[in-house]
Image 1 (cartoon, one colour):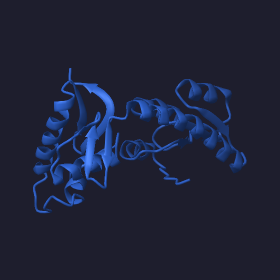
Image 2 (cartoon, helix red, strand yellow):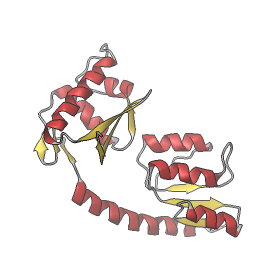
Image 3 (cartoon, one colour):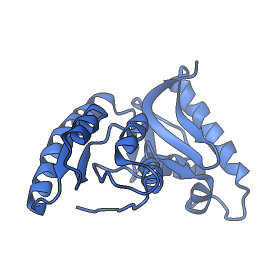
Image 4 (cartoon, helix red, strand yellow):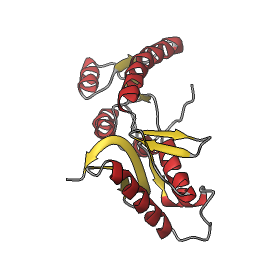
Length: 205
């Protein structure tokens, strides 16, 4: 298991928009915001499983935590092996659901060997730079990617290019996606950051 820690809840919420995590272990005693207040903020942006791990063993905290969207509550102290067991149990359940969802609803498919990206089964006619950009967005699907990262990590965009060139390339990619599905938006701008690719349908209206 690879673990990333965040001592500050605001940093944790920010990380949640930048990475694809499988599960959150949430303490309740946090600086700046109570853990019970963090749960609904997580639920605004993600359905990720949450295990509360806290020295607070009041039944009220447990009830509120579960009502707000936590999946499990473990009062400290406990044997770490029990935590690992509960993590594995939750992940087995959630990953089975996710795998079924991917099989049924996968919209974007990338073939790195052929340098091809398909959308709803249709091959998108992408330039080398467009393939780089869309490929990076796919790697961080449902997480934001900065314009700077898109610019400097692309193999086919000159480092001296303007950040605005990314917006132009994104616009071209969106036009090509729209030829297949003109009714929904899949690449969203994230103000002050960059862009996010989602396969969750977002109607233009």
